[in-house]
Each structure stands twice: as C-alpha cells, then as structure tokens.
Length: 270
Image 1 (cartoon, rainbow, N blue to C red):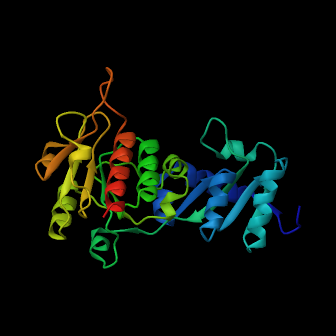
Image 2 (cartoon, helix red, strand yellow):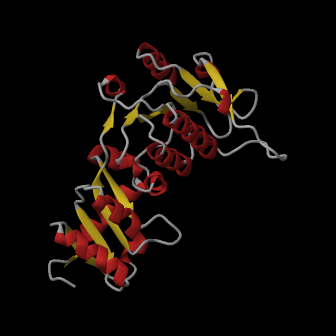
C-alpha cells in the first residue's frame, strides 16, 4: 500500500466511534460516516470532499482499490489493525472500509423558496421513525426527480448511519431541509403554491388518478400511526396505492416511492 496510508491513531478511532453512535456529535461537528466500499466510491464519484478514509489492513483488493482512489484525490487513508473497525462499527457485519465526510448541506424552510427548486414534488417526512425507511425515501426522492426532502416532527436524524447507508449516497444529490413543526412546513409550502397530498394506506384517491404534475408536496407519516390529525387537516387530498391480497398496508418507503415515480411518469408526458 502507498506509504501515505498512515496507521489510524487511538483518538481517531474514538472519534469515528462517537460519530457512528452519537447524534449530538454528528450534528455538532456537521459530519457523517460512510460505511462500505460502495458508499465511499459513490461519494468519490459525486465529488464529496471526504476528510479521511479508514480501511482494514487485511482487506481484499476491492477495498484497497477504493483507498488508493481516495489517496489519488488527496484524501488521507488510514490503515487499521484487524478488528479495530469492527469495534467502532454499529452493524452486525462491520465494513472493512469507512470514511468521514462533511454532512450534506441541511437547510431550513427558507431554502424551499429559493428560485430554481425543481418542479418535482417536495417529499415531506413527518414523524418517520425508522432510519432505513428515511434513507430509502431520500434515495427514491432523488431517483424520481423530487425537488427536496423535508424532515420534520419526530423524524429520525437524517445523519444517522442507517439513514446514510439506506440512502446509497442520495443524501448528497437532493436538497435536504430540517424543520420542527410539520404543520408550519405545510403552511409554508402552501404559501409557495405547493399543495400537499398525504399518503395514506386506505381511503385516499387512487394515486394514478391524481394530477401529480403540479409542483406540490407528498407527505408521509409515522410507520405505526400514519399522519397526525393536525397534519391531515392541512392536506388538499389524500392518496392511496391500491393493493391486491390481504396485506394491511405497504411499507411507507415503498408506497412513497411508487407515488414519486408516478409523479415522474406524469411529468414525462407533458
């Protein structure tokens, strides 16, 4: 390995562990951790300014290739003794390569009023509690051409390592906004001419029958409780994905993904 790949120091591994486990640490420092060669490679290809890459000294060639690519771009790579990254990680199968990166720019509601925001729907995640779901929502939102993702209410921290993993790099490809109150979010979007449509398991208009070409907002709620009553009161309409079989409902991320891509399909026909 290139001699520029210096061994990781104990205090660096403690810092890495803190970023993986402590939401306050991530928020205060404005940093996130990317775990695994695919996520790190995607970040490199997106031009993310990684701060440091850590890799297991016994890693296979694909890991070493990513570390070399990082170093070729002037990024410091640190070799770790076997087992060190496993102790720092939070997954059942810790990755032999991780990187620390600046968190993607996370804006406030004013960001949604900026000229140039895309015509796709704004995805509003109100009280989404599962980090895997939020990451998948961000991933689908980017892929379907959504204008932005707003995380509000009791939604899980978008910097959470599980969110980062599930987003597959999409956190760096779509505007992210954090807000406290979901009702204030919907009111602000309404003043910008963006009506809100709520995704519900049952009783809404069939999603293919709704005109989703207008710049609007798709609102998804908590996995267990759905949309709060005060949020539902601000909606122009509710939208449902009809289901065959006896399943109670679709996963929130799956349902929202279906609706986001239907919006993209409708826009493509304009």
